[in-house]
Length: 310
Image (cartoon, rainbow, N blue to C red; front, side):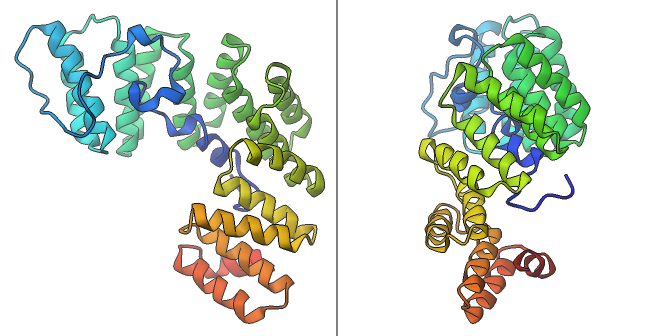
C-alpha cells in the first residue's frame, strides 16, 4: 500500500468501505446479506439484552437459540462471548444446513478480535460448504487483503465477479486494486462495468473519482466524487474532493467540504492537515500551524503532517 497519501485512497482502504468490514451475516449485517432470509437464524430477542450461551433444550432449539445469543453479544461488541455461543451452536448440531452461515459469522467474530489466522481457517470451512456464496467470498477477500495476501483476495473477488453479473462490490474492489497498481485502463473498465447495470452507481462514481484523482485529473475527479457524495456523503469522500478542490484553488468549496467532513468525523487527524493546507493557501499561517498541532493531537505523525502540508 505504499506510495499513496491518506486522501489518495489505497486499495485496502477502499475495500474497507465495503466488504472489508466483513459483516456478521444475520440481522447485524443486512446490507451485506446475500443468503436467503429463510436460511438464517431468527433473532427472536430484542438486541438490548444479552443471554448466556448455555441452553438446555433439544439440539435444534439449542442451535438457533445459541446462534441468536451470538448475534446479541456481537451487536454490543462482546466478541469473545459471541464466539463461544457460535462454537456451542455448531457443536450442538454439526449437520445443520445453516452451518456455513454460522461459520462465516464465527470467522467475522474472530477477525474482530484480531485472530486473523483463525478467521481465515473458519472462512475456508464456510466456503467449503457453500463455495458459491457471494457474501462469504467477499468476507474472505476482505480478510485476505487485511493480511496482505492480495493475489488470493483478487481470486475471490474475480470469482464473485463471475458468479454475479451485477455485483458492484467485487468490481469496485478490483478496480481500486488496479488503481493502486496504476493500471488505470483496467480500473476504468471495471468501474464502467458497474455503470452498465447501475448507471447512477455511487460506487462506480467513487471509483472513477479516486482514479482520476490519482491520475492528477482533478476537475474530472471532482465531478465524479460529487456524484458519489450526492448519493452518500461521508468524511472520506468529502476529504478527497476537498483535496482536489484545494489543488484547483477552489478554496471556498474546499473549506465547505473540510467543515462537513470534520462534523462527520472530528477525530480524523488528516482532516486537520487538509485544513492546514487551506489556511496556508489563504496565508493564515498561524492557523495552519495550529491545525498541524491538531493533526498531531489526533494521531498523525508530525513529520507526515508537515510533509503533506508541503
